[in-house]
Length: 446
Image (cartoon, rainbow, N blue to C red; front, side):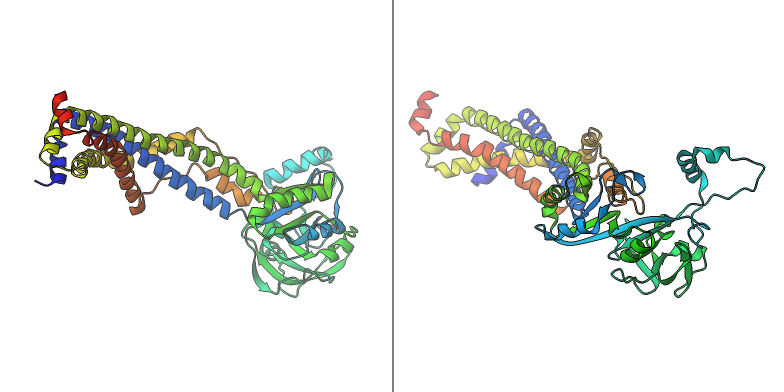
């Protein structure tokens, strides 16, 4: 009988002990597999969030968020001073303004005020709720949002995408009275490429393109060259917000620090990394728990195997002495006991893999319930951090709730490797120590 087969058969010499050790090892292997699956799921989600961060930073006037808050506007000169900062590759500014239908422009708003719009109207103008009923009534309309852009990008209008439906892309660097109009606003006002509308005391503005940003609010607005809007709205050299592009995601934090130092208290500086950090924080917590639990499970399995094999080899000291006396080498004796340990661990691994696959998602759910993720809201022309809600609302809100483990051949291979490590560490040392004892000493001790 070969040394390996003898070791395998020895694993079943004591059925009660074999069953007990198998169950305990199964728990250790199962816990290790669950933690390994959790680590993989969490790391995958962390990588997804990080890949969605982007490499832009938003700079807005201190205390202002779009048309909310207060404070003083930033200037183009202040934004231009950021171009010389390390790792900054581009800086573009935007200027937001509102056009009141009939009064400021010939355009009609493409959004029905509804309950939310009328509530906001009463909040900003309480007297409107007490208007006299005897005279002519004026229908309330939401203003048309206009954004002066230095570059036509989704970030300029706080959108995640921007598709040119017809016409040509706006010449953002120009000074002509032209506009790229949102699809909803164009439909509402029967505008096509080449159409004109009036704004700012009757100035004619020509439509050069129509865009689709994928949401109704943004599609109800329009874009103009920032220099043209600055002149028409009597805001020369002013900007509502700026977008700073950094050469790498890894340099976002240092760039934010440099921008804050440059602009001081005049600006609020927000990067998408801030929102990503909020989304990643609970994932990092789960990752830490999973890592320590994985190490603990492997250590526990190794210790259990070590103590079991130490007990077994001590019980068989006479058998070892006989084997040594008839010429068995230390390597053969060690191989026999390692084979026995591998057999016990293999049975525990099978039990553990089955249990791990069944319990992986329930245990991960328990870890998830102790953590929460946060997200922010946003709107077109909001500036600052409000626009990041679209980018991270879904990620932050669903970072944990949609977390699921997945099994693959790589995970099974790692699980098998873990079982082999447990078996080797737990059996090699005690078998080798006993095998080194001289046969005469063993027989005399018996």
